[in-house]
Length: 114
Image (cartoon, rainbow, N blue to C red; front, side):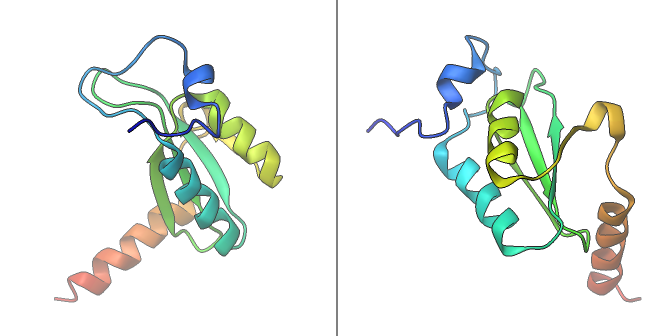
């Protein structure tokens, strides 16, 4: 069964595909959109494709909660961000926001109170 390419993943990604990872699907993009619509202050951070993984985007809410999904190419998440009127950054240039690290630390402390 072929999946629909509603977000232009195939068209925007070009011929290069990571070796070990699966390709991005509409479900990946829809998960990012659902996250962004259900939280305040969301920003997207694009992570580059590597040998082992496809291009990914991390959506980070204002409280630091985050989710990561495959996007196929930076152009896809840029289009989604534009449609949602949300900012998108290149993580190689900006790094991850401090609130994301603080959220991870809070979660770690909750899981391992010692």
